[in-house]
Image (tube, rainbow, N blue to C red; front, side, top):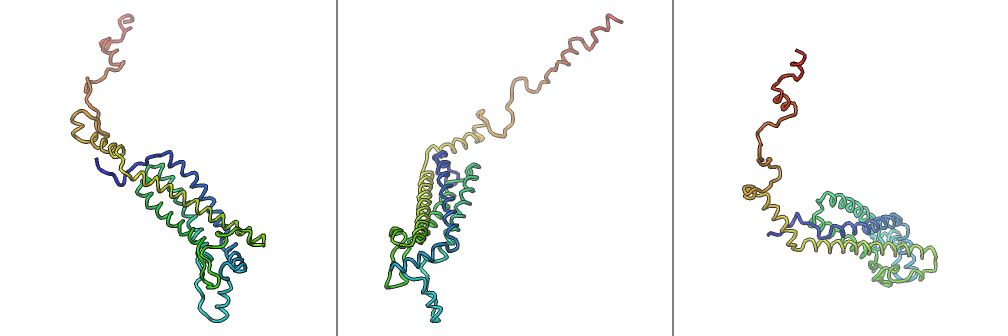
Length: 260
């Protein structure tokens, strides 16, 4: 009995289908919140609000650099357009991979080794997204921020109601990313479970190979796409009702003797 690396079966098919439901809901939620944030609904506003509250650097550093003909400073990842585009991209990618997984699972080609690569990549992408949304801001030495203020602090620290609403949206986006990370972590757990040695899984494949072997056929076993085995009276012509009637009447019409 050998270990099958590629053609392995999932331990729980029902569990795989059940996990697709929260994955679909989380993916749709991620698409909504990331689409709302595109291109810059609240990112710069929260950056400026945090600067006014003394929590982080100011977005005006780029204006100062332009005005003084200085090189542009490196924008912290948490306040960059790259992070916003990155979140949208992984949300769209998650939906595409979910649909592909559903089709491949129905067609029995969603193997655990393939899912292992995809789940690992998605875990890395969402971990990067979470790290970026709660990332540090050390651009201003006088106001260092190890964690984004809208994550570390309640939204009520801002007096502006609109800023509080933007803060809640940012918290919601962060929460959705954490949920998606948890979903893919569960998928990874099921993936590892399926990759562990399973005697029943491997034994079933070995039994199929033994049943299909020529030695088994010589012993009277069945082989798919094999000819029909010999049966009694094979080769004799079956008698149809017409043939039996002609043999009984000796090929004579029954009423010819009466009306001749």
